[in-house]
Structures are given as C-alpha cells and as structure tokens.
Image 1: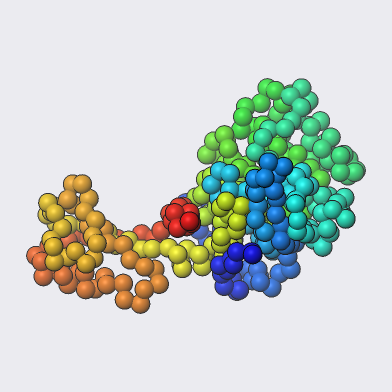
Image 2: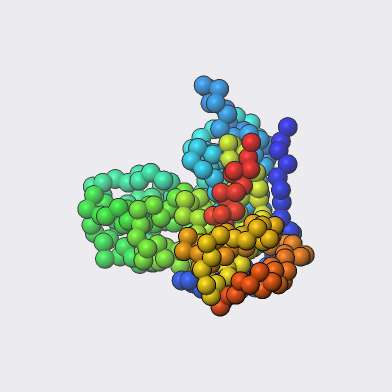
Length: 341
C-alpha cells in the first residue's frame, strides 16, 4: 500500500524571498489555486537486482513554485528526477508534464523540461557559446543569439563565451550546465545539487537568477545538500527517504508545525549545575555556566516560559538578557529522518 503523506495547509498567503541574510514578503497566488504542472502518480522503480529505489511515489508540483526535494544520499531523489526527465524508465505509475504523458507524449513533455544534473556533462573542447547554442538546437529551437547572450550574462559567463569548457573552473562549468538547461527556454527546471563546488558569491548570483525565472513563471524543482538554501528559496518542501515520500508541506507551515523554539537565558553569575527543582524544564547549561537554554514546542498553548522565569527567580538565579531562536529547516529535516523506522 502507498504510504500516507502528511500534507500541509491548502492556502499560502505569502512567500518569503531570499535577499542576502534578510527575507522580504511578497504576496502570491495560493499554490492550491494553481494547476499542477507535474503530476506523479503511483510511480515505482525496481532494478533488475531486486532493489526498489522508489516505492509508489505520489506527488504534484504546482505551476510557478520553487519546490525543494530533500533526502539523504540514496533516498531516491535523483532517480525520481531522472524518471520525470525521461532518463530512467519507471517500473509502474504515470507521470505527466503540463498534461503531457512522459511516455506517450515524450517529445512535448521533454521540450518543457530543463535539467541540471549533478554530473558535469559538457564537451571539454567546445566553447561556451557553441555549447549553449548546440543544446538549444537539439530541442529544435531556432537560433536566438540575443537570448543566449542574456543567459550567459545572467550567469556571469559572457566574458568566457569564447573559452573552451576545459579551461573553466569548477564553478564556471556548473554555471555552463545551467546555461545549457536554460537554452531552450523550458517551463520546468530541475536543479540537482546545482551549487556543488560553487563559491558563495556565485551561489547568490545563481539564486538571484532562479528567483527571476520563478517570477517569469518557470517552475523550479531543487535538490540540495545546502539545506539553508532550501530554507531561503523554497515555497514548498518534500522529504524523501528510502524511496518513499514521507512529507510534503508548505515550508512556512512545516517550520511552524514541526519546529521548536529555544529560549536563551544569559545569567548574571555562572552556575555549576542546574538546580534539581528546575529539572522539569530539561534546561541545558552552557559549558561556561553562563547560559541556560530552554527548548519548547512552537505550537504549545502553554510553553512554560513564564513559570520558568518565576522559578528561576525563586531559586535565586538572576539573568541579564534573554533571546529566542527558531528551529532551522535542517534541524527539522534531521529529526524527521531520525523518526523513520
């Protein structure tokens, strides 16, 4: 039987947009009101060895969203992407891209997809310009030098347009892979670990381009080991483990429901140990004895903060400052995997 997927809320009033270390809020149409551009139903993959890489995957990707697919190595992320892109044959199930079945209407389906794989697959002795134009021609697109120039400029590759791929750095080769994927103007872009080996500055440039693509209506499906990128960029998050989708949710709702808060209390005088009378709070004492950390549920109606402060005062423990922190997406992700049998 298919595993029941824990789903999120249906309405999404706004989406955070990553701008450096700050987030701004931009109102967007709720994703529940948007039609699915990719529909995956009952998809399985079993190899000749008997290994089952995917176990009845059911997933809808909404038009115009950035969807982050997270999972540990070997969870089935790349296998699932490869099936949608027509690289790997599924054992059962159906997949459609904008209503086009990937088997019956494979030409139409694949023309809508751009893929940036993990592996670098470029002709080492071709120029950057020739590589991107050739990739565009493979999809039957007419020559469009202005569009190719724009893609190369957006990826900071224009000054390397005449350089052979073999002379590029690892980060530039990765950007060239993205340029190839965008060459035929796809409406769906798969990014499989796209920033591996790319330095921080170039990574931010690439994400700025991804945001512009999303604003132009391109749907982005992202897998990454840099979970902070998913936290900053994604609208929805899916978690896959051992070939099964264990969760799909709106990112903000996921962090609200499964995240935890921490109250950090900076003490006036260091403590050697936490008094026994405060044991019910499961406080953590910093190694230098200067800070207490109290962790509590985001959704709790009575998190116990007020009673903790009263009990600290009653115990003669005085503090000079307090701060709160929310769980990161990475912490939620790790906890989800730990809960898996």
